[in-house]
Image (cartoon, rainbow, N blue to C red):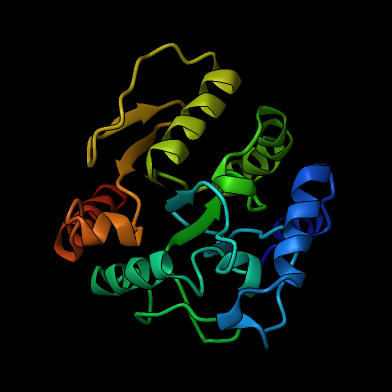
Length: 226
């Protein structure tokens, strides 16, 4: 990992800008759920991970309370991550079909995974000032991913906040709607692709299937020439 990314991720991990989020993360990490009662929780902001020469960025909203907040890695140790990595493996983007912990040997092919917000918010509802505080980290991630060609946003909230960031930074006025699999061109010649969130609810209601998400990842691979 480059010095820039190492320093950025260290800054993210040590961040205490949002008192409400710091308090909530501490609460989750000490009042553990029964299933994870013996686990030692990460209990800090969760930085992005993956290939720093990535052409593809996969973007969620925030770490899960007992996923990333527990394991220290986005989409790791929860049901959404379980489904996501089965699809990434099938699309030949990850070297394995699971993401359990920081030492499980996971590697991503020309892909970086992060969240708009680096801490889990109460009720999965971040406040505007929290999103603003965290946007400088997202800005740095985008700036450090020099070869970036594609952003896949997982879920409408991640899509909306990614757009909000680009609109603010580049004065973007073009209207874009959340339509699964549709391609939008962003400044810097980056293509934005909205994707339904890989949540158990979306899987169980058959809004998404493994085949559907794998096909979207394969499309992104082709567009980004991974």
